[in-house]
Length: 148
Length: 382
Image 1 (cartoon, helix red, strand yellow):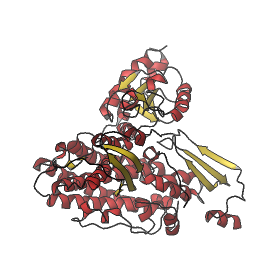
Image 2: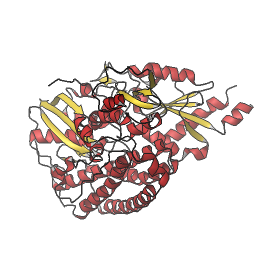
Image 3: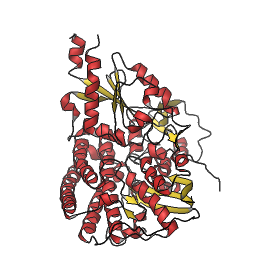
Image 4: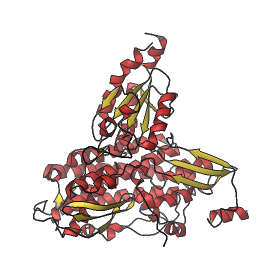
């Protein structure tokens, strides 16, 4: 294990990007990392708002057309190695917003997160449960730690 | 000096050119939700502010167009992740008004209980977020801890922590029936919330650091609040006792006060929400005490065509408006207006005249929820 991954295993920084869902997943994720009940900080997971500091990018919401470019830029700003966790039904398959009446795609949605940036782990749920977010972030960790 | 007065009165901004602009967004650390703020600054004092929304537009009304009414109602839940129950409640009320459906008393009581629990969790979230922006993380953590109790109660009744909407056309979902065990749990939860909230409030108002930070910051005068059509607690913080709950039929059996504060600054805004928490606890206790017996859903109704029906209700953030008409069992011409929409003017106004570091606080004091606010709008000049 290199020195980098040794230190990274002791401080994982998560950045949350919010791309136009309903605010539910967003609050649950902030809640799960910050609030005293779940308190992910005791597992050395920290919330950061600076992409240059982040290791894991958590994306919620169906990516709206307006949010596509900012999301790509944020992804570019995160240093390698990085992992993306898509959280919530909207981030996985567009949720209720993706298709209008069956197969007619909505003009507002640029598609699930997968079609915009590569995704490492997927967390289902509407809204996601804090426990699931934790396990999703933990599942993405080997990608970071085993990278050279 | 002369110039300052002019701008503060919002009378002439065309003549002055402000050179420094601090832009924030679309995605920015200080603001959880994507929106764009432009602050026009002179000597670190904000002279003018502009909030742009629109990046979250998902077109819920477009998706609702032509859906069966029951489906469309449950879709409104996804407009907002904080006040999800309120949206489905108001949407269901539109259909009930149009079709003339009578809702059983027990269902009305359960709806009120859900609505008030939602107000509790929304206000706790607001206070926690406000304290985080203030820089007082200890208070923020304490409030998140109290909020967890309410979230657990909502999960117990509605089956989910976030999207727990109870109402359906003619009553509430069978899942949300309150049995004696659940009533007991809610009572215990309310005791806990009240005790902790009193402790928090005592500590909060006796903290000289916090009080000096928030007094006199982000002032919205009563006149401006009415002119900018602010709604909900933001309006009540300026001293206008306007609460749609006093007009709503389902709140008739309950005794509660409309909380107002006088100053319209961040302190008043925070204290209005703190005091409303105790009113909500009071309403929930009354509802649990007098919970009527009987069925919770009225199934004997028939679908019919209706003209456009409008409905306004009071939700945690202000006044929520839904309207649609029903044609062959499907919704048409859906319009939703969320409370943050009418508070945007107040947010911009609150920034003006403050130091630039207080601008974010001035925006957050109006309890913004930009995700639900992104609706397609058309302004008609009258």
